[in-house]
Image (cartoon, rainbow, N blue to C red; front, side, top):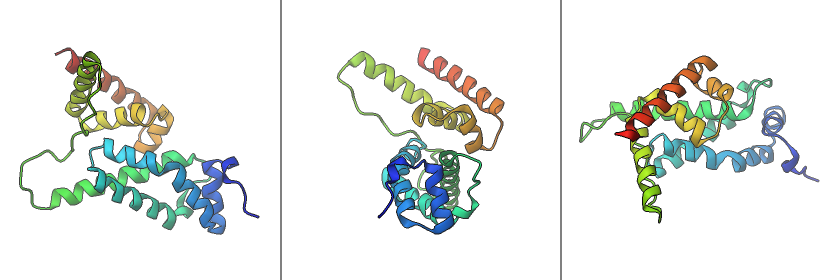
Length: 183
């Protein structure tokens, strides 16, 4: 009889896969987190089809390198660190290819859907535009915090920096968004 994976934490699942190569445990991890990874990559600016491929690459890396997971840490920050590295590798690969235009290396956040409430739509468009104006490190903390709901500690793990650095980036990102929206 197979276990009910619903009662397992993501950390327990990765340990189950890591120790016994239980593909069902890995499949449950993929089921739980694939949409979040895809969403994160799209918000970082990848086109949806490219983000879908990159999301699969993230899970291939988890599949191949599960033994590198630190049993004393949380799974989700480790997963998003892999996603961030896949994104950065894609940016480097894109930068090395010949370009048709002089567009910035950091892609823009995809456009949001138009909402029925015109005033709310204008506010969302202003925030959306302001996020695209942020420096890359500030944009990344905003996406992790408000797009993926990570804690400051988890964000520090993902970004390989201190919690103080995350707080500072977040403070200036929020300040810059407010300034952009006021203009």
